[in-house]
Length: 67
Image (tube, rainbow, N blue to C red; front, side, top):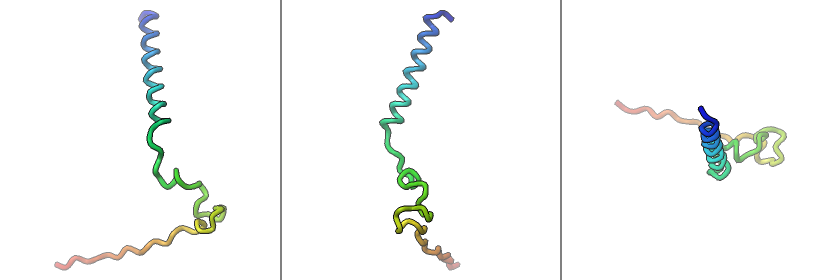
């Protein structure tokens, strides 16, 4: 491989990496619970008293299908 070929390959790789990083930075923000809330949510360390206890979930009721 000549030095021109190596340079072209390196430049192509750098462009691909830059495009991927640009997509990461400008892309949509994460929309998950862990991305929206602090790591200590639902612990005694949480500064918001309403979020010190996990929310109560309704119990799922099994519905029997009549045969």
